[in-house]
Length: 390
Ligand code: IPM
Ligand code: MG
Image (cartoon, rainbow, N blue to C red; front, side, top):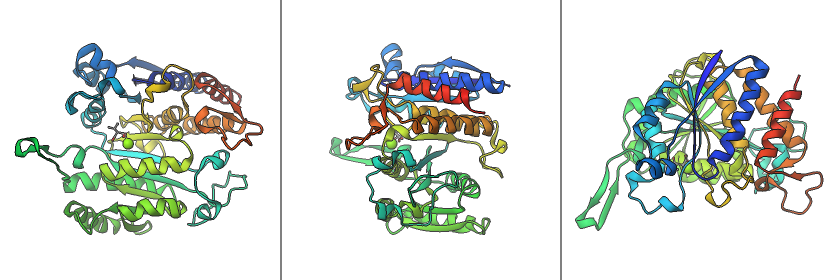
């Protein structure tokens, strides 16, 4: 099959990591008989410099013509003083809204190879009901493997905002419609179906009216999914439970702002924000989630880390989050499950070989068999692992 992929490398380390992901995709194409055609597009700070706007209309139009988008990162200190609607981050919001990708999936799991990098103690990791995957032959007991499903095109990110009182007062608005809430809940339920069948809806229903609507709709929808255990948690408590017993969570579904915050916290638990992939989807949730049932949905795939301008172009950024995002693209937008698993296994194999970028290196001084590598060498290691897979 032929697939067209819009590449939006963006700023900072974005181009470094996207380049490695396309190397990996090319090998997947050769190995499994697919052709990936790339269209490179500008968004973020680089687009501001060249065109004066963070998301040129041509970029959005071209992106809409592609089967999926692979994004690096946007932003940098030189654009920080621009007004809000002209900042590089605006490109992300407009791409998300423009492509209608309302559900953002952010998986976070503890990899046994990176146990040392997780700031939690053994007894904390042993809490909860997560007991490691069957293929995990490490010494880690417990751990966590959770998925944050964040609403992505609504809420306070897109609500009415402004200044009043001559600029001395400011407001932002959290507003959600029934439709916006239900469609993301359905994606979260579909994800829970193919996972450990637990869904926790996170809100602030003790205070916020919008949260009370989320809760009512979740309660109603939960009756359609009797085999999924539905629970509710306030966001402040969730922030605490993530560091007290992350193993208790399977799928967390929540609003745009809460999901933004909780997903950085979850990322830190995995050891490095350089490891976390994400998928943003807009297709209606259908039955099987991790399978070809989702094929055809145009999604945005991106690492959850930022543009890290201080290390841009220096061949030290961790490309794994972007490579793993490309794996999610294969799975969710193209329905290529076998290929996605092959990429994930290759990343695992590179880590098993002891290869580490600086952010995931063992800083305790007992690195043993670890080898610190740069962005390109890590990408190459994934490619060679892919080539040597059966
Ligand atoms: C993220 C980022 C973005 C967000 C920023 C860069 C606009 O933090 O994807 O989590 O807040 O959504
Ligand atoms: Mg964020």
